[in-house]
Length: 165
Length: 401
Figure 1 (tube, rainbow over the protein chains, first blue to last red):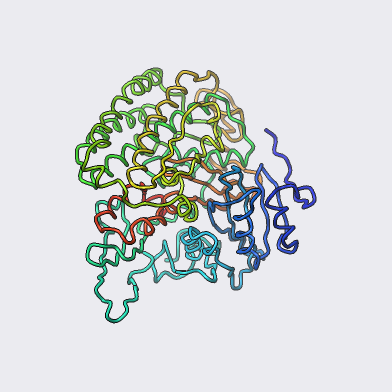
Figure 2: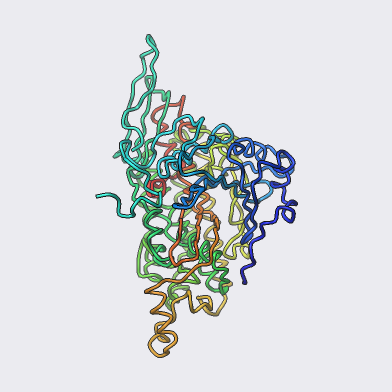
């Protein structure tokens, strides 16, 4: 099985239900797209993420009604430093899509999507705990895995693997 | 250890409630889960799960290891279904590499994966029944679990932390009598499931403790991210093995048990039915086991045979290079999900083109399932909390990672 190069041309991928839905809503919300290894990635503008999730959830054609996962990747030292990644699943259509939001390293913050899926609660707390990304509008944004009085965010790339001693 | 001090706000004049700390060492929490409960008499008013006691930073550790060195770490996330985690991880890396597997490796993986599911469900059934007060079931379940662990030992040398699946195939060819032993187990097992059901399904005490308890609707289950039997018990007909097949599951015929009441009893019935379906898949895998190699033909990724390594120069070089430098994985990212005994287990791996993963994230089914717990318990009796915890089948190692 040969690896096919990734497709990043928006015009070519417009047929995908999630992309066409988002572009027809607000073309500025879609910063870029990528189709690689049979997986679709949509780069969403930071301020549009909550509404984009709500739109995709309620789409009648292909509802991405299930939030699989939220996580984050730290690209230190390049900028924008953080990528928050949402994996959505359409249970009726059996399809996945990945949404990505790029955040600067200075004060990484974006809107919480707990109002769209209450299940985002623990995932966002985990990203906050381990990466220090703040989610505004989250009902209970506190550390979840590390102790309450822990300093630093262990999954950041500038945090040593063996910890500070 | 998210919040050491619970902060429920009590209005003046309404202070008839009290805070009760359940866990982290409570035997029915299946690990170290702390629940902060606000109770009014015997009724739970609010519940705050507190997790993180088993956090070992596995995701961070993965970033410092070669791709093949991560496999043993994945065992240790969920110690009840090690092979499911192995499978999910190796599938994700194979997707990144664009590797195609020989059919025998895929079928072996499916067979071992289903045995793992049975193993995990047996531990769940035994401990769940014991939490509610049915001691005997535990001993029955562990009897069959022992058989499965012996099969694991035969095939991988380890009873629990198997690390049997490797990137590009499986570690070893199974021993000669292995398939006969699996077949004997598969012949014997359905009657044992009848035994468990004979102890529980019609038992009036069991039914009273589980029917109508800890209910959750399909809408709530989807909104809270529940998956696996917790989701199917509420009537959502979705199973990744059938709906988004991986590792050759499309070649197998099996039913997906779906309930509709969304209570503890329905989830119990779903899992017991899954036991029967899993053994059917094992039997199909035995009947149709293809012959051929158990590893992909990719010398730069897959370790050579021991025999070849000692006789061929090239194989020795590849062996040395893989062990000392790892293998480079092309740049990219994948999300691979499999149906673990608890629900959707997902691995998100980002590669920067080097021999070590840039980021490994595990989507834990239990973490999401646990969010349904307050919804199930609030407004209901304190004694039912134990039944609810058992019914979502949590493993704290997987939640905390």
